[in-house]
Amino acid sequence: MKGKTLLMAAWGVIFAAGILFASDKDATVPSEPAQEAAAAKEYESFGDTKIVIMEAVKDMFSHNSHVVTAGISCESCHPSLFERKRGAGKAKGDYNHTSFDAGKYCGACHDGDAAFSTTGQQSCKVCHGSDMQQPEIIVFNRPVKGVVFDHKGHVDMGLNCASCHDKEFEMRIGAAEETAHKFHMQAMYRGQYCGVCHNGNIAFAANTRCTTCHIGIKGVEKMLKKKNGDFEKKG
Image 1: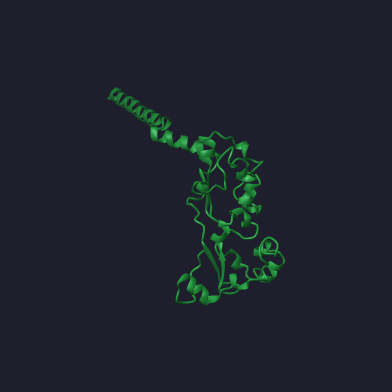
Image 2: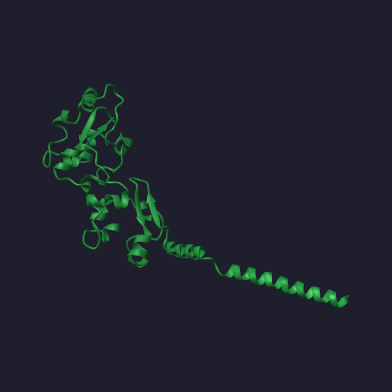
């Protein structure tokens, strides 16, 4: 009886050892999907695959496209162009197309030679997700109502985005009106906002031809074919 008990105990130990061995084997040999997930995570170790910035306009940068697909090393951008810290570029206050045109940030490579230009209209969708359709007319309600800006007319004259953004105007709907206490005629007479060009030399002075921009509420209603004063901005 004692021998039978010992035999059963031995078989129990062998059986338990087999289960442990099988479990250990399953734990140490990851499945194929798990291996693929691990590989993907390794690629993402360079940073988030996509960095999305919402202000002033939504834009997107793909680490994966630059590091994995194009084979660009971390040192190519960090720290000479970008501090290796999320939001560092925006915090400096000059992360915009004006800086890109000067060869800073993305503009160090995206100059039309090393990589596609940041100012090419056909390139907008790559980073912004849309063709960044430009407004034709912008209507301002503050500090006074019934003021219009012919955006399309200025673009047709040959001005590009960097001519006004982000030096004189932030590229965001309503940005100037948020600081209406600064966005006034006296500022323009000092060479700010529209006054940078509308100084009597480059373009007609800001204190002349008033009704070119100040067309009043009724004028805006007529222009936009609206029947009330709560009109929609087209910028």
